[in-house]
Image 1 (cartoon, rainbow, N blue to C red):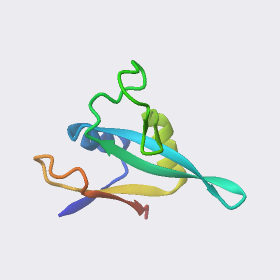
Image 2 (image 1 turned 120 degrees about the horizontal axis):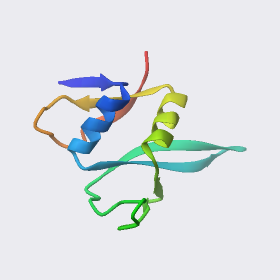
Image 3 (image 1 turned 90 degrees about the vertical axis):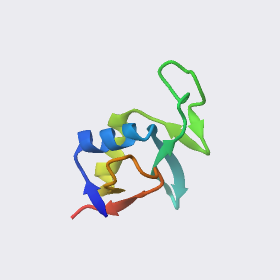
Length: 99
């Protein structure tokens, strides 16, 4: 089963329960730049504020939750996740269009 999350607190709790961080990447898209959303998991040392680890993962830049949520909302996206209360596989998410 899955559920679609749009509430900021619910998204943050789901990601935090799986040790995730918000990341973005700006990529060229014709004559402008497009922002790509992603979540990075298994990066316990990833911490931009205290600089305890890399701020970039595979081209993605660690960002604040506020920046990430702004990009999510600007893209009119929601997060579809597994509703497994035990945590489940962090790869069980995808971005979907908001209704």
